[in-house]
Amino acid sequence: MNVNDKHMLDLARRSFERNYNTFSEFLNLDEISSLYALSLPVKFSLFGGYEGAERRVACFGDGENADYPIDCIRLSPVSQKFADSLSHRDFLGAVMNLGINRNTIGDIVIKDNIGYLFCLESISEYIINNLTRIKHTTVVCELADRSVEFTAPEPEALETTVSSLRADAVSAAVYRLSRSAISELFREKKVFINSRLCEKESAVLKEGDIVSVRGYGRFIFKEEIRTTKRGRLAVRVYIYK
Image (cartoon, rainbow, N blue to C red; front, side):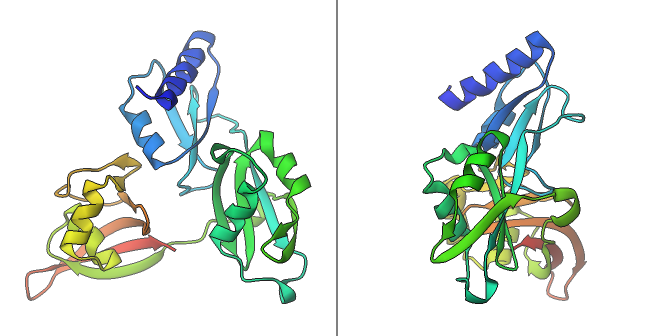
């Protein structure tokens, strides 16, 4: 058992013994997948600050009424006219250069060259007070009112044809990968279905399954539409850009 698994068990036991909610730091896909495999004394739920977040905080206890310790910080260029075109890597690099731990940071969503950074409440004030530049761009950092101004970007619909509903066949079609390339990603343990590591290439996708392929992105398998004249399956997925 690794250090993170032991920490998750400790949080779960504390919640069970003291009858209150406990929270983890932000977990990546590997850590979430490992969490599902643990035998815990209480239930847990996951939330990353918005619907569809990839990096999420685990709540051990009553997740339905949980007040997750997550803040959303808006990172805005002082002047959009003279700002650099800022990428996810630019925002993340600037935040990490402050010397904070990666597990205090969740997703970063970019809309109109403005970054929305999800982080633990314990670190938000430090980031707001110390992050002033991203690349050559001066930025202003302030807490965002998620209920008013933040909505997660909608995934884009894509229709494609596949030989079957197997995870490898659909993933290869979505990301235009060869059979050998997608097989290698499975061998390297880079494919997750509903946040759980999937090592079985032949796993059949069901409606609503969220597939994450590390290095490529995520998509939601929506439905099988029809069978083509050549016997292939036309399917619809929604891709997170």
